[in-house]
Image (cartoon, one colour):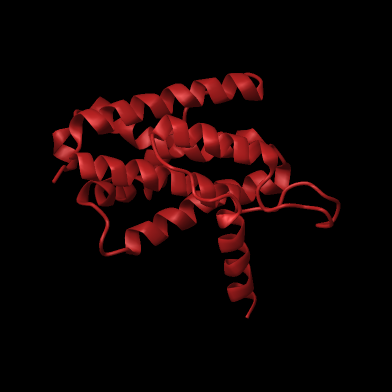
Length: 180
């Protein structure tokens, strides 16, 4: 079992920056004002849901506890500038650094679980808002740009992506349940 104390302060900051970078990576993949707001807010919801799960690895529990603190998150948000492709390249470096530390320091099973969790977080972020269309007509749950970004993240994180459309179906099911 891996705990927070197994990391230096700098390693811990780098590790915590990984999930934030995956969230921002999806937001940058297909920028839209209202969609981006919903996608950024999806992180808070996901963290709360993860924290409520009794069976997550202890290391992830420590990570989520720190990511739930707004001041910690403010201090971790990367200072990235440039066009979307430049920003994505900067975010990839943050994600790679987080994964490298995770794989070096964490128990292999915990590391695999957290890498998959980070990808699942990205999928839920992509599904948080409908993209494109006009007044909802012709919009899609996950845009082609977001699908491409999810595939890139799966490669970076060394995980398998879910079947195409699975995120969309899960998000639509959640919308229907909340409408009832």
